Length: 137
Ligand SMILES: [Zn+2]
Image 1 (tube, helix red, strand yellow):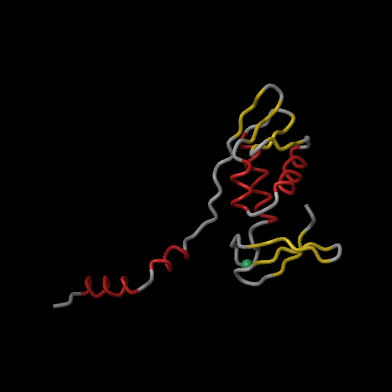
Image 2 (cartoon, helix red, strand yellow):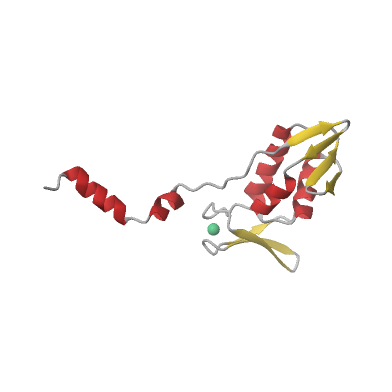
C-alpha cells in the first residue's frame, strides 16, 4: 500500500537531479590567496580565479591594480602588486569586479562575455540573452 511518503519519494525521484542543483546554484570563486613579501603582495591563485571568471588576466589586473591604486604585474600564474595588501582587500575589489563585469544583472548568472561595439561595452549573457551596457574596465 502506498502511503503519502512513498508517493512523495516517487515523485521526487522523477525530477532530474540537475533541477535541484540549478535552482540553488551559486557562482563559486575560491578565496584569494595572498602573501606579502617585503613590499609586494603576491596573489597566488590569480590564474585559477581568472580561469573561473573566464576573463582575460590583463583586464582583471587592470581593474584590481586601479582599485588598489598601485601597479601590478604577472609572474607565472601569480599576480604581484606593489605595496602591502590583505587578501580581504583584494577579495573586496574582486567581488566588485565580478558584480560589474561578470554577473548578469538581469538573471544574476555568470555566463557572460564582454562585447565591444564602437566605443561602447556590453555584458552579453548566454543564459538569458540580456545585453547590458557597462563602463569599460
Ligand atoms: Zn542573464
